[in-house]
Length: 234
Ligand code: DX5
Ligand code: ZN
Image (cartoon, rainbow, N blue to C red; front, top):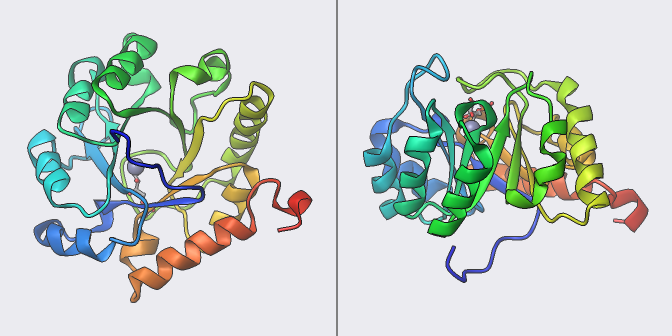
């Protein structure tokens, strides 16, 4: 983000998977109060759904009032991910299984100047990342099977999240912990308590009648329930 200051936690990143694709500019303006816009790129190969590629993301980058948090659900991330950093995305996240050499790819993305994230599907364990937390700026713990918006939050992912939070703390790592899938009032509290600091929400934001109010509500719930908030007296 080239010297721009980064937003403090909790960060709320609406997913435009739930936006109206033919009114993308209008919907991007509707989330100007968010921290990042979460951009789901799907290739109908890594996941059984298809969205858009670099041409569309370049237009979103040119139009969005907030920085881009690109979530790549694509195969062959080694080949495609750096291009999203080059077009100016603030962060580029790829799935662990989609890269031949995740650490080398993470370094390339950082060298271009973007933050880099690594994503874990529900069945992907987190332990393999513990020794490499410093190679990433964020870890995305999927709380649904990737591919579609509007699915139910997987509460059973909370132990993975808590374990990552404990490991990050133990190692003094500042890696962001992001959750994606089924985040809404009623579920964001659990994710925050388990240690997430960055929250993706698609249907809960774009399905709301007052989008600004929904973003504020999510931020407030995440703050109230933040990991360690009790011990800080918040
Ligand atoms: C799912 C995507 C999510 C999706 C979340 O594969 O990665 O970003 O948009 O949608 P909700 O918030 O509706 O579960
Ligand atoms: Zn996503």
